[in-house]
Image 1: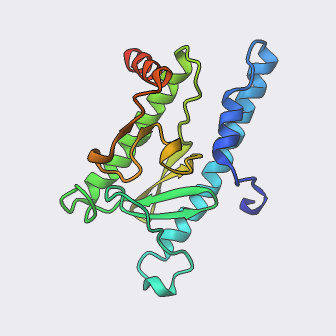
Image 2 (image 1 turned 90 degrees about the horizontal axis):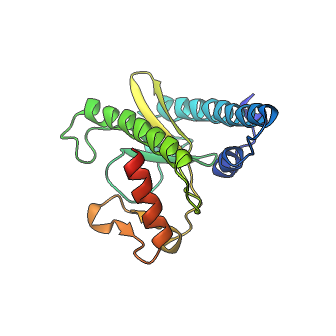
Length: 192
């Protein structure tokens, strides 16, 4: 049942599962079980919330129980935040998609593939810093596509070391003074 799922800190649960020891077969099994559990919980909650968002998509905004969030960035369509998850509804009329809902939906598939490759690479490269990658998934319902991403622990500009809070290229932030981050990103890039 969705109500029984612990959801307040998806990222914390995911990071704790990824950091579990795996030196013995029992430890590996315990780690795998923890990763499967968080993924199943996330999928269940994300699917339920996505259906609620899409069921209300065409009702006037003032009559909806779930209202869009006002967030930075134009790519990614209409955004919602529920239960510690950021939801983005693919919408070709918003952002750089020239009116193509199909292009917007394909972007989400590419985002999911990219983060999956990046996560695998970051787990296979020796580094001293903790790289946070959002737990995420793509949900398709009633002909729409939504990407669901666990909220990361980014409080403000000072906690964002690499990326953009606005979604605009001109606001891309790379923390030049963080040599460990730069070296880790180079190593991950080489691995990829």
